[in-house]
Length: 340
Image 1 (cartoon, one colour):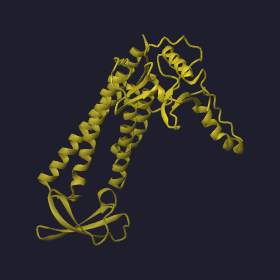
Image 2: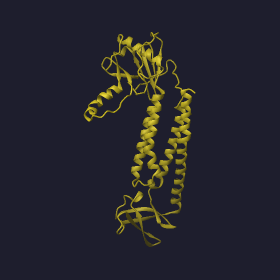
Image 3: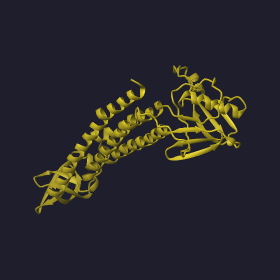
Image 4: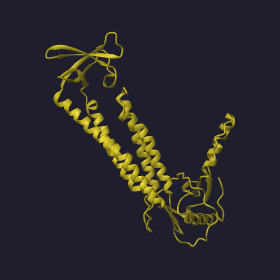
């Protein structure tokens, strides 16, 4: 079984065993909450209540309202919907006629907010599931000559630097694409931290403030959207180098760079730069961090003014095309690419 087939199986397994069941659970929960909210609107009564402190009980609030012209008092815990209610506040509440000890603030957010949040997340998980099935393990499509290209932003991949030896440049177009490990890592880290922020607020009712739950969910969604965008870019990014120009393609933009604009090409080992940056702190603490990772090399192209035109990851595939690209850049620079 080749790597693409195995990746496709893993993608489908993640979608069917994890993402789709979570989406179904959230959908079931949203339907359940919607029925409860609708039942409150149709069968409960809305009254105006005044809050006061519960005598001798700091963690409770007393609500008083009139029910069939008689005053009614009930005590509620200072948590959830009533966590921000203070003595003397007047608020509208839904009251269950069958049990006056059941009351909920009569606000749209309190009644329908959880329904909207769970429904949105059900849709998100379904979408993520289909994206994982669509992209994980799939073979990137090669672009035809003349296809519009886009800007490149350097990303790190675990592929080692390409050896300097390369065949003679025959002047034919060179086509490179990012390693699949890169965008799969984007998907993994996006889902990992996104779910850590979103699932606990959705599955827990102990958080006293609704806005805190919503904020955590918003952060998780934003992170997943951000990492999803990066994954889509890395999945689709292609560099085509012709004898006269470089065409860089990825979603959300395109870019053409004439070879005549390139005045400097340098080689940078990102991990070595990070090691040097952390060297002083490690020496002061006397702690050895056990860093045994190999080099992570990118090639940076500059124009005459020193502007960074594009970064090319040494792990771009196929490796034979990457070697041809480096030979072309060496020839352009007069025979060598210096280290930064």
